[in-house]
Image 1 (cartoon, helix red, strand yellow):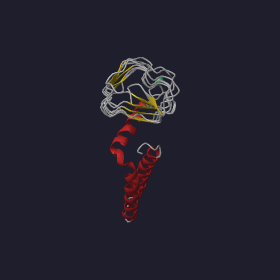
Image 2: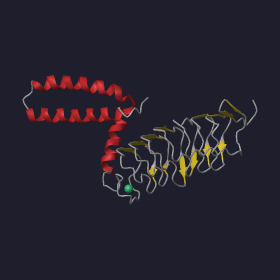
Image 3: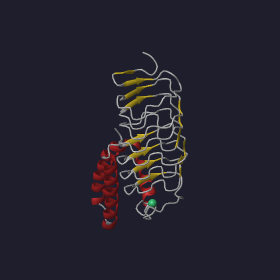
Image 4: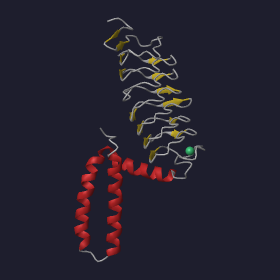
Length: 251
Ligand SMILES: [Zn+2]
């Protein structure tokens, strides 16, 4: 197999850097690039039918619109540390986890990913400006080390859970939690989300067992107001866990 060859809709790239551009090519569904480390070309895979890639060493994408408007259903980039500009705009994936991502430069990195529900990048330092602009389904953002760039959640009207380093950013979209003065609630949900951890499904079971035991114990107690309050708290917690586990974010 030669470098650049396409076999059964799979593009094979053998080098650590590649200057070719495959914009709008409809005969590529997979890219096998085991040595690829950097992408500098703008629009390299823009507007293609690419569904999946194997790029375990890819650490930097500086080409804008590189993976814009593809058919990627998940982002499997375990080594990706930096992205520059609108790299993953207008895609249909629902979940993103970029464990190595450290920096986003420029703007619009995930612009218009209208199905994106869940974003996680635990090492990210900065969420770029307008990063999630018009990501209208975005519900959970887990980036505990990240500062937030201006208008990062522009028109993200469904954002409910936010784990990030600060809440000081500009926005005037009028519909995001920041504009609706609901950001504190998002951070509070974020705190619960972090405490819940990735074992949310196990927690549901634990909470219901705890609740039953607590109920039995409390039934024997005198203070009925306290009993009611505690049961209410448990019910809220259970509702929260159920809600965010059903997003299917842990699969
Ligand atoms: Zn806003």
